Length: 78
Image 1 (cartoon, rainbow, N blue to C red):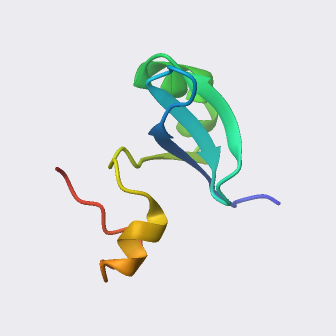
Image 2: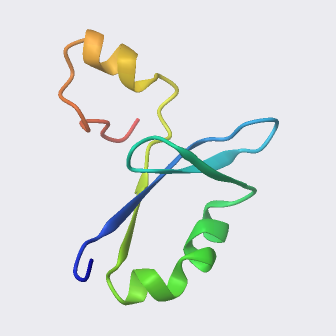
């Protein structure tokens, strides 16, 4: 599907890793040691505009944010 942007969400990691990558549907892709590892891994796709990285490093889960009344995707800087 040409022209579609794939969104990779960077969240808190699993099993001792500081970061983890998930697809837009919330499915786990991989653990990461540094944020730079994600940019390096998807470098060419980012340059071509095929991939967008979204950092979601808030400690609260999406479910908690929805229950609190915050708009979806309104994470802001903390």
